[in-house]
Length: 232
Image 1 (spheres, rainbow, N blue to C red):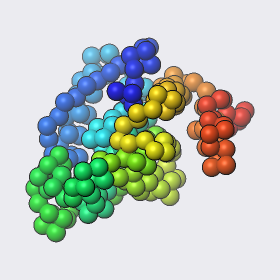
Image 2 (tube, rainbow, N blue to C red):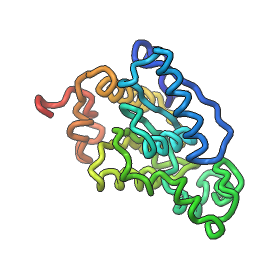
Image 3 (cartoon, rainbow, N blue to C red):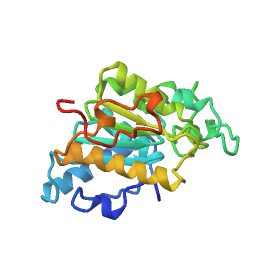
Image 4 (cartoon, one colour):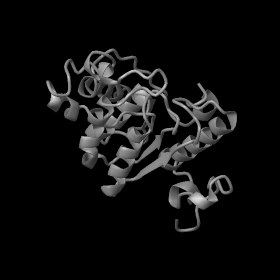
């Protein structure tokens, strides 16, 4: 996968924990993941002050939901996540053109009913409605040609977090889909993930793109990968 951390990037940075879950959205996976992480901490394998969460697509959704429920993680990266099941429910998958309602009622999310039958479950399992509980710095990735999860799902979460003065960043690669396909973008994303994790997990320097952002007029000219200005 060109949009996940490679072994060479992870070496010496973090322990990699893989959880394969077949459960409904939000709360049930949380009750599986957090005790698992706690068990690894209890065995002394990791520094409890330097743990990160990272997921893409369904894993991105679970990462977002996790940080609304716990402050266990020092930072998090969520790629192509659903943040608002109510707005997503009425959309379509841009690739095949399928209505997305099936996914939430009986598919991956397993809510078990329509929005009108179970409105509270849609709210409870949507990270955006818990955004005020987030204290974990989070980096979002969502591409504007995503044909599986509309990128406005990350726009909604990002603007909510910024409105709440939470530490959040948003990366979009123009023309990319649900996963990154172009090599130059994959390399760029790997570098940004490494810089983000290094800053929060290894006390590395904050890069310019995190401290100052990249203005639209500088897009493609200044990638912001260099160190931030002193004091930034």
